[in-house]
Image (cartoon, rainbow, N blue to C red; front, top):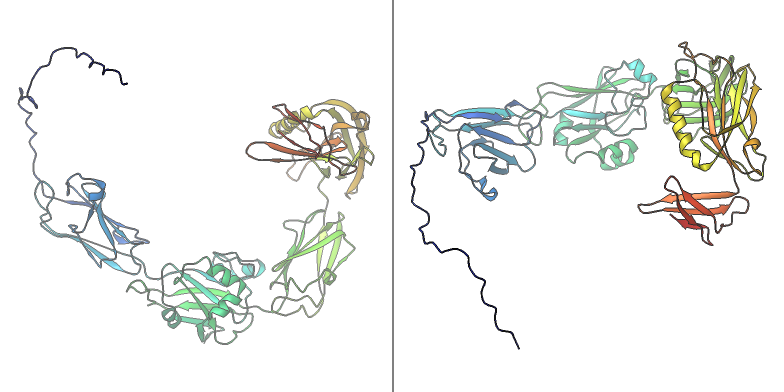
Amino acid sequence: RFPAASPPPPRTGHIVLSTFPPPYSVAPPTPPARTASPLRVVRVVPTGDTELAPHLTITFSEPMVPLTTVAGTETRTPPVRLTPQPRGRWSWIDTRTLRFQPETRFPMATSYTVEVPAGTRPVTGPALDTAVTVEFSTPAPRAIGAWPALNPEMTEEEQRRRSIRPRWGQGDDLAGSTSRQPVVLIAFDQRVNPEEVLSATRIIAAGLSHPVRLASRDEVAADSIVSRMVEELEDGRWVALRPVAPLPPDTTVTVVLARGLSSAEGPLTTLLPQELRFRTYGPLRIASHGCGAECRPGYTWMIHFTNPLDEAAWSPEQVRVEPGLDDMSIRVYGSDMHIFGDARPNTRYIVTLSASLTDRFGQTLEEPRSVTFDVGEAHPTIALPGEPLIVLDPEGPPRVAFQSRGHEALRVRVYRVTPQQWTDYGAAIQRWHESGRETFSPPGELVSSTVVNAATSGELTEAMIDVAPALRNGLGHAIVAVSPEGTPPVDESGRRMRNVAHAWVQSTRIGLEATIDAEAVHVWASSLRTDQPLADVDITLLPTRTRAATRADGTARL
């Protein structure tokens, strides 16, 4: 049963009948007088020689189309003639600005003419009285990168001493020492025809012209550097060439792209020749050696060769150092050999390289070669290996080692701290760096302050710090700080050295691992003695003090 319909709500006021729209009681205002002027072309972009033309815009002085919807901005009958006309579309940006958008960009190596004919009429007002013609052009083909190629900002001798990288790509070879029959890669700023590039290319070495051909796909793929570079280039915008016969050794080679090189995009050709240079490999020699500006204990010794070494064929047995270098290790990077070790101060070392040392071209040194490294005074240093957080071995003594060099006496301080003071420790480090003071003041209770006499011979020495006074029953946390006793030494510029080493040390039987995701911190606790998971370990997340206890598998979630 439906209830009776409710009566309609009452209407307030009275109904007044009137006409719509109402009759005007006031005459409309008279528009201001306007002096009619012919239509003008205000601006055309681009004009003249342009590096790249992504689109064309023409701006008029008067509205050319009425206001309309976005869908109505495209036009098939623009009041402009563009010659030549690439594929694209014309559209009105606003009522006075017309734009032509090519499918990608305006083709390169082309001259374009933009003409607005006389009589072009705006929405209102007089028409254009005289035709407007504007020209612009995109550039002819230009080589924008090449491999191999010497850096034109350096002399040949500088480039032979240094590892030169290509302008683009990540080459691992020395551009100044290439094979005698390399794959020559040339990248262009536009699409080119490889056959046209080949016909315009000459390779000149030792004053003679050497025949060149296009490199095959297999040859490009076999070259580790060229194949990697090609992956980063657009198809059709690079050409790979190769000399027909091996070039002379140890010779500067010039690759000349003759004037008149044509493009695959337009009819314009180059007006000037373009050149790139590289150098074929010569005999394997030592080009230079040193440690930079000076050699001191702890510095890396570097030997630079004229050619990249065969990293798969060399061995440390091919290097002999006299007197012996403690903790010596050797690395080879292309044309550079780096020697690391604990060198003694004020000592001359002689490094002898075996005659069997081989470069990537199969050449050897032919006879042993020796270079000398004169190691000077050591910089005063202090180090706490393992800082900033050192975990003591639960089965070992409560001691940490520190290393020093060039200090007569050192002040060793030990502070007792709690995990809640970890944030204060970080803040103290920040204040020390910002203040520029020589003394570091960590948080906690000072429980030990002793002076340790160190060797002054400049050799690296090691001593132990006992942190037991900061621990309770062998467990707890400590901060150790080691600094020069007395007046700190000065560096080469005469400034006092802020030479302080510090670390947080904890003695615990609990090992913790933690990982963080967007929602929580996941913790795993285990025994440092047995590696077994630990249950019921109370975990607190600072500074929020969120707490959780580990489960039987040693995990907890905060």
